[in-house]
Length: 91
Image 1: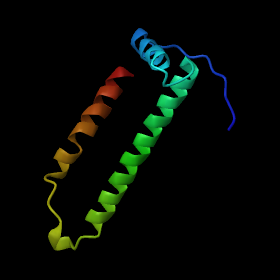
Image 2: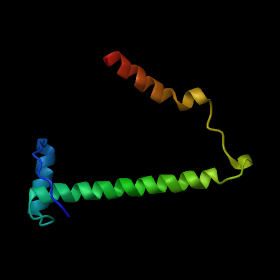
Image 3: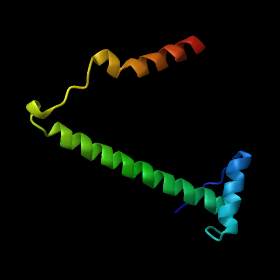
Image 4: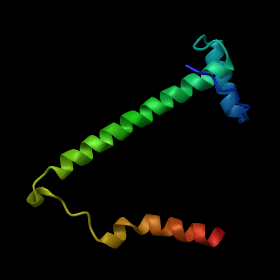
């Protein structure tokens, strides 16, 4: 495993949390705490992605007569359209 050196900045809350993990003996230093917690976060995201993909595959394998309506298509994309409109106003 290679190590990449990088300078980063933390909020007071994040730095305090990292120091608490070190003081509790969970990690030998702040750098290891940050790396360890990022690895945990990545593993959790990977797990959530796998669960979502499995659920999508399960639902897509259902016969069409067992599909449930999702409502009006405009309602499905309403949040995304609002987000894009807000972004457009910022530029």
